[in-house]
Amino acid sequence: MRTDEKIRLFFPAMLSAYGPQGWWPAETPFEVVIGAILTQNTNWKNVEQAIANLKREGLLDAAALAAVADERLAEVIRPAGYYRLKAKRLKNFIRLLTDEFGGDLDALFALRTAALRERVLGVTGIGPETADSIVLYAAGRPVFVVDAYTARLFYRHGMIEGDATYEDIQSLIQGALADDVALFQECHALLVEVGKRHCKKRAAECGGCPLKKFLEEGQPVREMW
Ligand code: SF4
Image 1 (cartoon, rainbow, N blue to C red):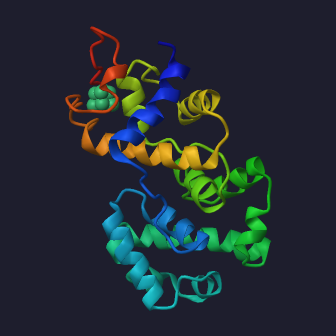
Image 2: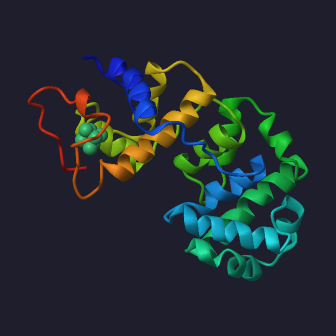
């Protein structure tokens, strides 16, 4: 089966196994942005705790985040881990928002998709996965989020080489799927679920995996990623 056909068939197979994942769990687009920055290198439970702290302290707001001292912000988001670094990253994003868009997230999100992605990617400490999470889940634009789970799974299925870049994988997926925000949001969340349940870093546990039928007969699962 061709790679693009496989990619298209992955989605219904994962959806029928796990159902809709309801990403991104947040009350506002601004909260999605903050969560996307805080979730780097930590699990979501820790992010929830940090966001709850921000809400309690009245800091889930661009003006409040612009005014708070770095050290105070770091303490409030401590549960998210790497809290000093993440406080700086939050401040960097807020600086872009306040200096160039009057603190108005809607004004930033009014940019065309490519320009929006470029501006968010230009914030120090925000890499492609975080930028695309913001563009897809907060701004609602059709940009696919690639992560380590996706890369590992695609590699194990022989769909990419070990030196594939973020952009290579993103182009492969976007070339196979129609530009559909809801599809991209759900498909990324489902790939993460497959990665957590079956396609683990340590080893692929293919038994019971909804994507097992897409391994070619006799195809060895690559374990090197
Ligand atoms: S666990 Fe096996 S079948 Fe499932 S995605 Fe990974 S390599 Fe494919």
